Length: 614
Image (tube, rainbow, N blue to C red; front, side, top):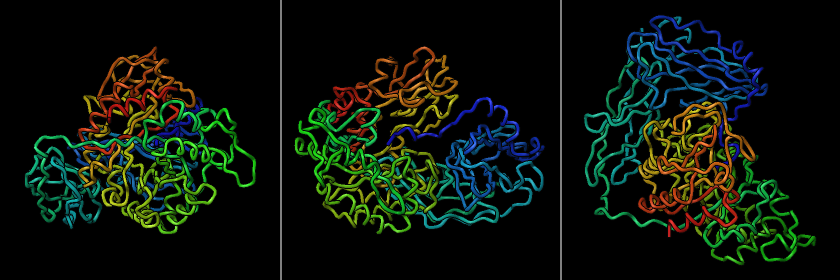
């Protein structure tokens, strides 16, 4: 999904923040000579929450290859999301390690990461690489000469003609492991902070040998793991795989309010004739169970003849079904090929999955009973799990473990059986040690009919000062803020986990993201904040943007433009055509979009998806 909530919320109280910024800085002295230090500061505070930033300074005379900042927060205060780092949590203790792109810090140089939090407290007991953040005590590496143990259980988790997925069991260390280096023969192929990796750029039908070594903050390197030999797949003689033609679109229950978008619009816009599946968003996840999200919109709102699908009014008879559920029943009668899936979770309600993962069977049973409630029996053809994100952080952080996602989907499939659809919306974070490495997406794939890969919202004005970047790039490009944040790298990594191409749907956003205070048209410019939007800052529908800020430039397969001082990026029918060509070349199962009300009244964007897939 892509909602108002898919971003780090920056509550800016300008005058208060400016004054508070000086008093909320963690009390660390300036960087001590000869030490690695860290300074953590509250950059914004809105009473019930805050934004923080930590800067790591390498005060030594040699480059460091990894860093790890740790601190404690008081009860009632928590980190809710973080960026430019890999976060773990144990109780009130937080650890922030480098990502694959910012672990190396030259002598005298700095790097930083940021985070959002809830509550009023602040960090204490700060350490960096095991030593005090202010540089006092023994500098990292001063007495640590013990290397980590060798990683064990190295195995292949999947392969394609050009990629191999690997995973292994973590090493142990007297201070702490900070990362792993994967070797292809004697050459280092990739460095990660987690216990899985995807090696790319390989040759088809070729045998490769891989090993892994662990390292700690002091630079000690472990012995090599066991070696594993993998032969890449045949490329198929150069013939591209045949792509699928599935087209799924999200319909939101809240769209019937301010947006005034109803099930009837799916028909009148021509969308119904171009899609195969509707995901109804969202059902809630609470108390470890599936629950109705909005009872009024879902099954109680009265539809008169003029706004209904079949041209007849609802009734107030006892037990009569009304609302969007009844309208969807009527739509299915008119378009019997369409499948309707009820999607649960989303950005706002994904926090409930943590409890659900404690008893997956009970969760699955509650969902099955809700979808098959006698009041709307036969409406839903399956269930979609939109967990943002298992064993990682979205609006809230989950620590239920690497296997939790796989176990939950296994229980859902067992309860729903093979006759109903089971799908899941999943992260597009392909960075090493990122969200895709936090959960067993490869192992869970056997239980789903397909994954909706959320290949959008890579960049946006939650980074208020920029740099400007398209929120849904198809490929990487020179100057991209995070090189793995693009659809091509995302799909390659998922295929490297052994997930069949036909189980992957490419995500398309029917909206754009924008900044204001921009003077540079090309991506990479600075900004002063999010651009004004119809419903919230920094985001607007395609149907609005096509007139509000027509785009005339393309980067990485998506469009962008500068209108006055506002910079926007979004997909057009033309760029969607290019993305559908990519989906077909990769043999993907099709595409999906978030969400229906963002399109024009005659369905320009969904028409581009359908014609592009064939």
